[in-house]
Structures are given as structure tokens and as C-alpha cells.
Image 1 (spheres, one colour):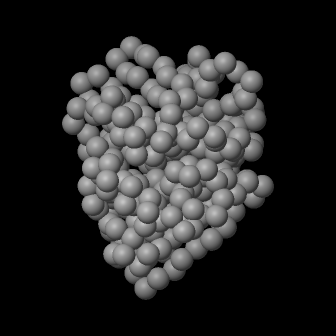
Image 2: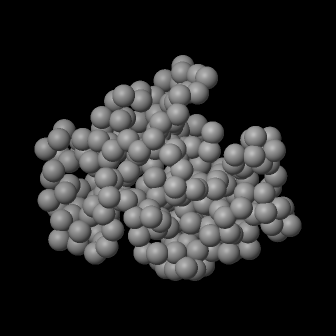
Length: 263
């Protein structure tokens, strides 16, 4: 499998409000949309996305106006040029985004804002990638060794960076041959043994695979949890879970297809 992170999905309570927020503040555009029975899915991203760049998937369920942002879900991080952290944050403030964690409070290394549903968005300085493109998705794990082993054995991911402090550690993972514009996965582990709640506002990570059935069989050989196999998903996608219960979708992506959805 190529193993590139294709998208990260979050649930939103008011789709139109969220679409306007991401279009206005991150200059995202709607890439594709699927209207299902009682739900809507929208793929979003910057205008000029890298071929290995990750989408943001917004999902809205009818009647899903009350969403719980659990603490097992961390944030997405978006890129801005190295010298534009403060000006980019100021731009968001001018747009009416709430002041959450400004650059100064973060040592001028990064900053944070929140979207209308309380999803945290980190702003990181990068000298590559389209402005506001997704740099990484962070999730929290309760056992670092187990989580790292899962991503290495199941998906052939490699450790591309880490920060180990007195009370926590951050591990960055991605496929060995991924481009720098691809989205990374950040695992955050706190040493105090705390447990986390998933909530329903966080949806899943999605991995782009070469062959859905073949890669699924490979995952089963590697003893990944069989959550929703390809057959149960009409052979369009499949889902497994990591040791902390985070859902992971597998999908084939045809770059020449008219739609981003395999329907």
C-alpha cells in the first residue's frame, strides 16, 4: 500500500456555517460533495493542492446538532510560510475568529484557533506546501509503545520526528516515501496514565491504498482489527481501528476519476 494519509474527517453541527468558516478563514474550496440519506459529506482543501496533499472531510448528519469533542481527538495543523505566523493569525482575528492561543503565548513557534464546533486548528510554520494546507493530524494515545508498533507493523509507517519532554511525548509518523507535502500523523502520549474519551465530533483518518482488497487482506494478516471489511462497505472502502479506538478508513483514489467519492 502507498499508505499516504488521504484525509481527516470531522463532524460538524452546521454544515453551511462550517463551509463558510473554512472558505473565509483558510481559503479552502469545496472539492466534492456527496448527499446521502440523512447525511452530507464535503471534501475541502486549498485551491492548489499537492497530489499527495490531504483533504479535510466535513460530515454533517441530520439531527446531529450536539457534538462532543472528546479529548482523544487533538487537532489538525495547517501550514503558513515561516515569516507569516503572526500576520496569518492577525488575519484570522480580523475575520472575527476567536482569540484562542496566539503566537506570543506559544513562543512564536505556532498558534491555535478553533472552528465553530470547537475543533482545534494549529498553525505551524513551514517553508513548503500551499498556505493553509494540512500539515498533520494529532490524536492522543494511552500506550505509546503499542500505538507506535501498530502504525509500524500494520501500515509500514516510520518515525520521522519526535519530541520527548518531562511529562509527554509527541511522535510524528508517515510512510517512508511520502512527499513533504503529505499529511503526517502526530501521536501524543502523556506519561500520567490518563484515559481519553473519543466523542462523536472526531471522525477518522483515511489512508490511500493501491488495492483495497489486497491491502485489507494484508492488514488482516498483520492482525489489524476487522471493523468494517470491504464487502460490508460495497467494496468501496473499509475501516479498521487503532488500539485506542480511532477509526481508520482505507480507500483507493483514482486521480483521473470525475468524483473523489468511490460511489
